[in-house]
Each structure stands twice: as structure tokens, then as C-alpha cells.
Image (cartoon, rainbow, N blue to C red; front, side, top):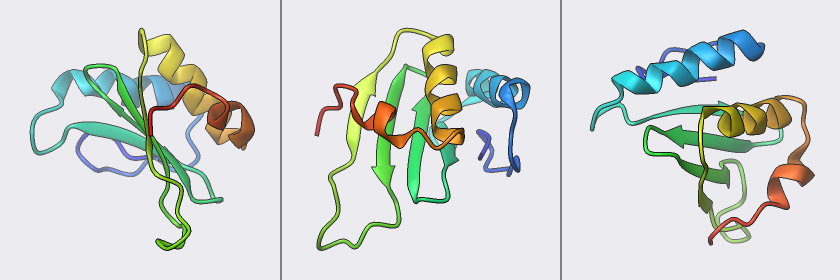
Length: 100
């Protein structure tokens, strides 16, 4: 997981994920997001305004799925999605109404 300043948090638990999300209060134009990546290549980035970006950063560009965008209402929903990704529940996240 990457915090708002680009620092790495290895294998974060729920409390660490919450602290990283809280760091979005200090986001700026140069450091606008926090993110969590799964070993499968799927990554979820969260921005201060509630924007989430869901993408597979390891996809072959020729066959890549377009990144998805969605706005969520609140920290708890973002935290829930980070937990799903950490658990490897890609299907539950992919099933959400992403705009592509």
C-alpha cells in the first residue's frame, strides 16, 4: 500500500489502511492519492474527493481492461474495498458499477 507521500506500507491490516486513508487529508496536486495493489496486478487508488480508480497495472496494454472510475460516499466504503482487495476478492470489486 502506498500512502499519500508515496511511502510503502507492507501488508497493511485494517488499522494501517485506515491511517493511510486518513492521510488523504494532506493530499495535494503532487501527491493526490493513496493506493493498494494486489499480487494479481489489480490496484485501487483513492483520492480525497471520493474518486476511486480500479485498474490492472500489469495487464498487457494490447488486451488491457480500461481503468474504472467511481465515486464513493465516505471513508468506510473505501476501506471496505481496500479490505476486499487485500483479501484477493477481485470479483466483488470488479462487479461494482465502474465507469469505463
